[in-house]
Structure formats: C-alpha cells, structure tokens
Amino acid sequence: MPFVVYSIIDNTVCVVDLAHISNELSHKFNTNLEFAEYKNLSALVSFVKKKDTGTTRDEVLCYASIIDAMAAMCPVLPMRFGSVLESYNDVLEYLSRNADAFIRSLALISNKDEYSVKVLFSQSYHEDPVGNTSCNDPQPLPDILNSTNLAREYLSNKYKDYLSDKKKHQYTEQVKSYFMSQALAITDYIDFNKSLSPAFIIDAVLLIDKSKKSKLLDIVVNLRAMFPMHNVMLTGPWPAYNFTKTKI
Amino acid sequence: MIDDKILFRAGSADEIIEELEKIKPGIQGRIIATPDNVDSGLAKLVLTLIELIRKLMEKQAMRRIEGGSLTDDQIENLGETLMKLENKMEELKKIFNLTDKDLNLNLGPLGDLL
Image 1 (tube, rainbow over the protein chains, first blue to last red):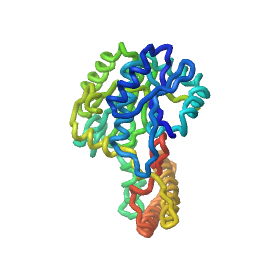
Image 2 (tube, each protein chain N blue to C red):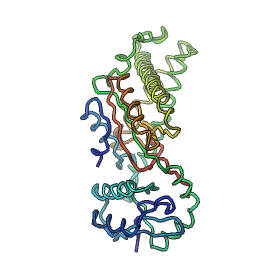
Image 3 (cartoon, helix red, strand yellow):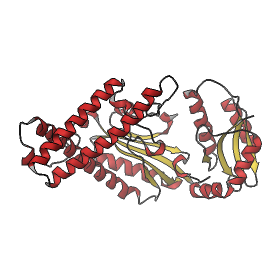
Image 4 (cartoon, rainbow over the protein chains, first blue to last red):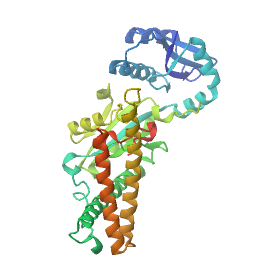
C-alpha cells in the first residue's frame, strides 16, 4: 500500500500530541493522515490508492495546505508533491536511513519561515524597461556596421538587440544588489531563482527568523519606494521548501 | 491559498498574475517521444541543441564586434553566415512543424535551457 509523505518533524522540538494532530488534520482535509515514527523523527503520511488519471490542481493544493497546517504548529521539513513510498516500512526505512540529514535540516529551519519576493517589470516599461529608468544615452553603433548592405543591416539589428539585453541585465543586477544589500542585514539565507520570464527582475526566496518578519516587510516596502515603476509582491510565511536541500 | 499569503503587493495585480501564470510548470520543455512521434521528438531535441549553439555563436560574434577586433571582410562574412544560419533554422522548424516556443528544454531546478 503506497504512502504519501507530507513532512517530517523532530519530536524533541515539536512537543505536540501527534495522535491529536493527525486526527484534527485528517478531519479538516478529509484524508487518513497518520505519523510514522522512528526514534526522534516523525513523518506525516497518508496511504494513497493507485490511480490511472493524472494529478489535479486540487490535489496539489490540498497537499500544500496539509504541509502548511502542520508548519503552523511546529518546524517541518516539507516534502515535494509526489513523495510516495511503497509501504509503511519503506517510510520507516526512509527516516532511519536519512535521520542525520533530516535533523540537520530541521535544526537549520527551526524558528524560521520562508518568504518569497518577486519584482517584475511592469508592461508599460517592458518594451524599453531600461531606457525609461536610466538617463544613459543609447550607445552609438560601431562605424563598421553602418552600411545598407543586407548582411551588415542584419548584424546591426542583432547588435542593437545585444546592447539592449546587456543594458537590461546591468539594470536588473543593480536592483538585485540593492535588495541583497538590505536583505543581508536580516538573513544569510537568500536564493535567487533563475528568471523564468523576461519580465522578472527579482525572484528570490529568503529564510527569515520569525521575529524579523516586519523588518523584511520594511525592506520590501522601501524597495518599492526606490523603484516605484515595478510590480512588487511579498508572500509568506511558507514552509522552508527551498532551504531543506538534504542529500539523501 | 496564495491570497492568504500575500503580505505586500504593489503595482498591477493583473500583470503579476499574468506573469506567474506564464511560468507555471508545464510540459512545454519536455521531449515526449513515443513510437508514433519519435521523428518529431528527436527533431525537437536536435534543433534545440542547434539553436543553443547558434545563439552562443551569435553572442560571441556580438562580443567581437563590441571589442572592435573584426575587419571589414570578417564583418561581411559573419553577417552573411549568421543570417543564413537563422534562415536555415526557420526552414527546419517549418519542416518539423516546430515553433520558437518548442525549442527549449526544461532542466528542472536549473530552469529552461534557452
């Protein structure tokens, strides 16, 4: 019977009544949740029926909501959607085999939450994002490209695109480093995701002490004040999905 | 769920949502090879790699122009070569019924190849 694994907790840190929590969450999410325990570690799991159809958005959201509800009670090592083991014994073996790595990761995220900061070019600036935000004059084309010849015209257009991309990249780095200089005052744990769309300037995740939440909010509000032409969004607290890279 | 998690938002909410929708993980960057479509699956993979190399060549060429190290003849050759290469790629994409969006590979946590 396959088991879905939602999250792992350290029982010495999370002093709660596991039976009570699993009952409460089972009732709330209409799933048979239970804890598989190995020494000081417990994994929140539920058995799952094999099905042929694909995953639905509701299933993914339910999975994330269960982890979120658990994280509201104590530090959890969140698993990614699709973490399924073949049997209950496999869950116990998984805990025993990786116990040290799990405990190290749980210690790192204890008393901390993950937040996400996204800064995006707004569409009105998207066409020429940097031209509108800096005072630099456009760089002149090298003389060697000035000709009506087809091949040179082609190269000249490519070169203009290249200069524009370069300028945009420099600007993005400038915004990023300003944000970084502020954020480093409250945490060492900052990860920048690779931009998945040209509209993104910053797509960062930060692991912050619970007590520093308001400082992060101030930083983001100041960032927006500094760059009012951009769209800015701060979300959280999330379970520490991006800071629990255990080697298993 | 995400609505409860928004601590601060400034600017156009519609634009933010639009961009977030665009980057939702999908099957766009995957090579789906089955016995029926193995030709196009393979073509997609090969053309993606050629496109990567073409773009790298293009970028290197731009750096050399910027550095001012190219002669008049070299510029002429470079322009013609890159133009022909791009035209050839367009032809190949048409033959295999592929668009620019198809020419990419999702590298998981590393993001997209192109």
